[in-house]
Length: 170
Ligand SMILES: [Ca+2]
Ligand SMILES: [Ca+2]
Image (cartoon, rainbow, N blue to C red; front, side, top):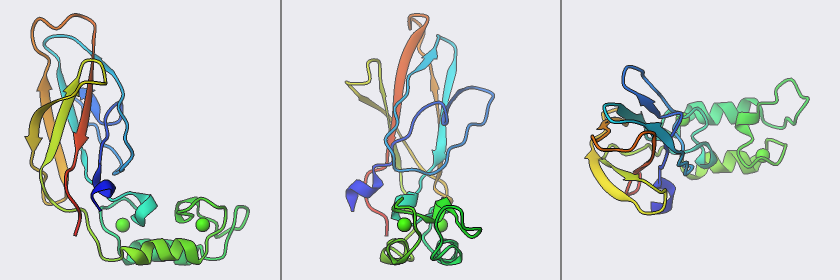
């Protein structure tokens, strides 16, 4: 189960300069995108831990429950062109909503994203990573971390960030 929780997200969606309120959709996809910053900037990393649509959390609320099940059920049997077609419900992406999609929701039905700390890493080259903080999530599995860009950082610079959620969800 550990691999399911490799919630790593970074970047335009969750990285922004101070004064903005970036949000992200919960995802388990690894995304590392460079952000150009200069000394004096504060980079805000924030987001919400999620389970991932591919595991059955279709609406991205960090829970696999009836809402997700209904989304698939309402579109059951449909394919593109059908008025009931809902691409979000086609979890396995095979162009039809059937038992395979239902099964994905059923397999982890009742699971929620666990509330626990996440680790924030930074890198100057996207290859060598250093852990810079451990951030505690809120009761909605939301997290936020401010990274002040150190003085002496060349301008412009690219800093890579990633968040890692170690552990499982039960
Ligand atoms: Ca859900
Ligand atoms: Ca399908």
